[in-house]
Image (tube, rainbow, N blue to C red; front, side, top):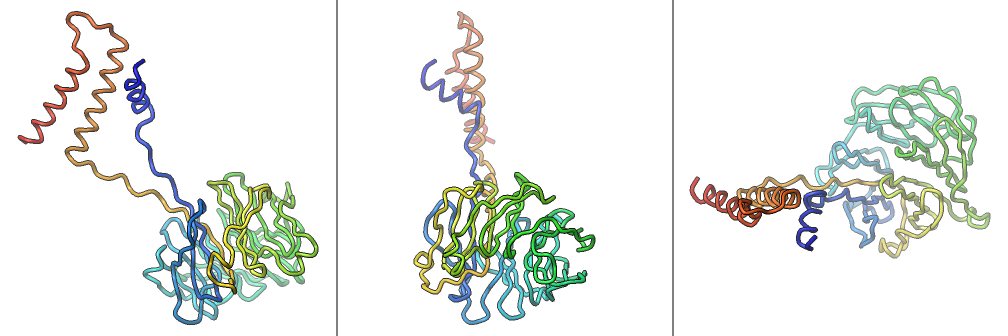
Length: 339
C-alpha cells in the first residue's frame, strides 16, 4: 500500500488525537503562606494563592465535580476557591479539625473535637454529628457509603471504618500512629501514612502490607504526614514536613524520589501542611466552522474512496477517487460561497 494511503487508513481507523487529563500536585506551605502546585510530569513550581498575612492554608482537598479547592486556614476559618485561587468564599464549617470530602455523596466530613465525627453539605449547611465512646480520631477518608478513619490514644490504634453517618464503627486493622489516609479507586486500596511508614490494605482489612519504611535513625527526625494517590499515573505522593520534601514512588513503594524540595519551593522553611491531586479535564471540543466541516467531510469522502478503491478494481466505467474528492470539494465550496 502507498505510504499516503497507509496514513489515511490510520486516520480513518483511530481518528484525531484527543487531549488527556492533566495531573497536578497541589500543597500548602504554611510558613510561606502559599498554596502551590507542580505538574506530575515536571516543570517549575507555581503559586496559586499568596496570602498577604496570617492565617495561612493548612489542610487542602480538591473537588473534581466543581473544580474547587477546599482548604482550612490556621485558626478557625475555612474556604473554597477556584483552581487559580480566584472567587474565594468562606464556609462556616469546619472551624477546627481534620477534614475530607466525599465527592460521591457531596458531603464534607471533619473531626472536632477528637471523639466526634461531623458531616455537612459542601456549603457547610445541615451539620450532623456522631460521638464515639473513646478518643481519638486522627485522619479521615470518606468514599461511597463508608467513612474510614485512623484512631489512637484510648481508641484502638489503627484503621477503623463506619457507615456514612459515622455509626456502626468497626476496627479494621492495627497500624502505627495514623497520620493521613488516601484511596486508590482503581484497585480499591487504602493507603495510610503512619509515623514511621506508609502501608496499604483492602478496605476490609485484608492484604495489609508496608510499602515504604523509614529506617530507625530517620524516624527520629521525619516521617510521612500527608499522602495522596495518583490513580491515573499509578503513583504515590507523600509529604514529609520535618524533612521539608514531597516525595513519590510507584504504588508498591519502589522507585522513591524527591518531587518537590525546599529549594524548588524557594523556601528554606518549607512547611507542608496539606497535599492533594488535581485532575484538570481537557478543554471542550471546539465547534467546527464551515471550513472545519468541509475538511471533515473531505476526510470522510477520502476514507470512503480509499475503501472502495481497495475493494473494487478499477474498470473503464469506474470513477477515480481523485475525481470523487474534487467533486466533493467543489460542491462544498459552492455551498460556502453561494449559500
